Length: 70
Image (cartoon, rainbow, N blue to C red; front, side, top):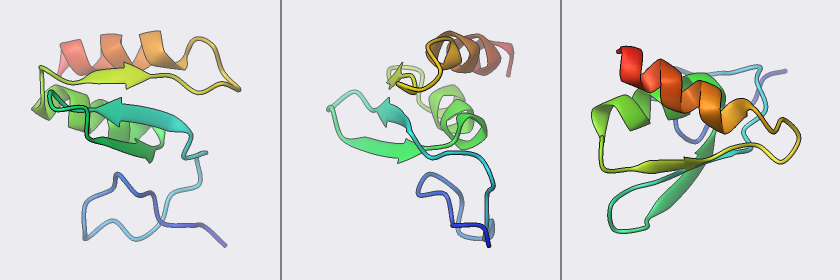
């Protein structure tokens, strides 16, 4: 069974990826989520930043690059 990603939109009910990437907005308010949903947040909030997953050292860079392409 999939657990809902904390960074997902209301209409997105489940996500199979780990929810261990951290998005921080300009005021340092943070939320954990999967790469896909954190990428969407970063694309929508360009002053935000990402702390990648401790299990996957390259995830932060991938998220940043994917958000820039949106």
